[in-house]
Length: 196
Image 1: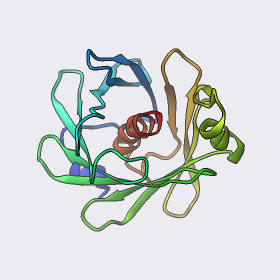
Image 2: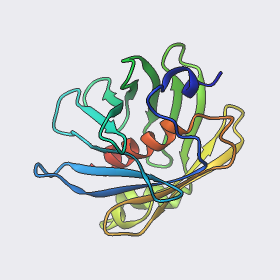
Image 3: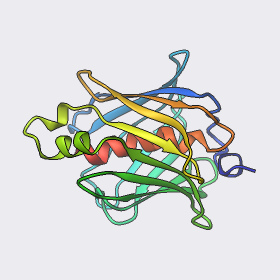
Image 4: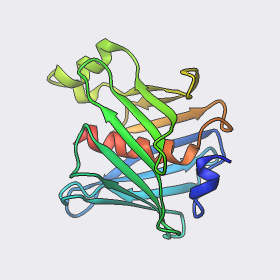
């Protein structure tokens, strides 16, 4: 049984292609995000609450029902743990953790209960990663990530696209080997944390 089946009772993302976009900012200048499936329907949306200590990043479905809550373990930090909690059951289901490096960003998706690895999200290209972090206009260089399974095999990608706000195309070749929900939510978290 996958972690997604075991935990995300209020969220069923079984498709293989999703778009995540920063759609703007709210009245407090906090970035707002939306995730759409391959047909263009909104499946998740939320506002990154970066000004709050141990802030919550609640994600709602198309009906406005809170389905997933992301909470930083100790304030929003570029290198830290982010707990994904099922909005229906209140159960901690997944953890995103990050190893910060100038050369490569590595995010891991783990089960919250035993810490077992489900997938890794790695930035691609040392020069691109370095350029984003040190060049004066580096923030305009699009992120690119590779998704790998527990064996280190590539199973998908997260491709940034040039747009007014950050936008990503998520493609997962084998949805049976990795839960898609935390990859979609994780893309929002990664962009919010690294972009702010």
